[in-house]
Length: 420
Image (spheres, rainbow, N blue to C red):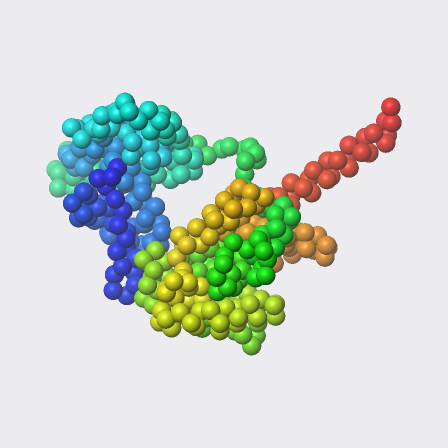
């Protein structure tokens, strides 16, 4: 798969456009045409386009590895057989790393080195892995759309009878692939992501205090920035992309609030991979303590970094003042997890969003809010549509705890009635 890569280019006006490129660094023609005419034309987000290209990357990598000319065959009306469809679907279910290690069908195949047994063992282990069912299903749906488009491109100039026959053959192939769509029906609640226990959040907040002896950052400026970052993630329940999209000029210091807003393809944002807001624009209130923390960071840390004056984004790299990148936030949490084993193994920025929802549920219970009102208020702060099912997903820990408590009360009443 090293022969095929996804490159992100930034166009005039700030638009981020992902493209599938070959070994020569040039965009692959048909994927580029499909992306521009069928996907970008309907105003899909850059992240969605990139997701589409991940699926096409799998398709073209499988084509290289098996020696099957996908483009040529679709355009010529030589569609995949049932056996080939099954093989493609199996490849789709593998992680990218497994396809990287798979041998090519041509002379590019890499021989197994007998002096690196451990490396070969790990390669075999990766090849046996499988991606999540939703991801596999999404990949296959995208590939089905693309193959249909390719087949139609080759059919358009044909006489009517020949075009009709080719359409029937095309539909037979697509039906075979659709029938193999992975079913998303796992009803098990085990292993589903949920909020960490409150004690874990208390530990995290204790570690990042400026005067904490456990604080892993020696530089005071980094301590100020990273503490604010974690406090805003947990205090507001925002996503990582929303956090990195906060602009200083959209913070109302007088009214104690800040704006979470969508700035897609912002020409002011120099980040190639621009953090994005997925939910609705909204103003979020800030307590005086949080406002003071923001002011402290902006005045005493951010203002001292040269590039910070060239853009409005709140969080910046401590090295030069450029807007903080997504990968930097990920590394921050990776560092915390590796240094403090008492923190959750799955501690990520998004886990703090779950923690916010868990805390919100406990507070709503203490205030006696009815479920409809609680759902309405939660959706407002989180930026969800009123009809969204996200509240159930994010309040899973609280729901489970409440259900377990009621179950134990029921068992207690059982033994009270039957003491023996």
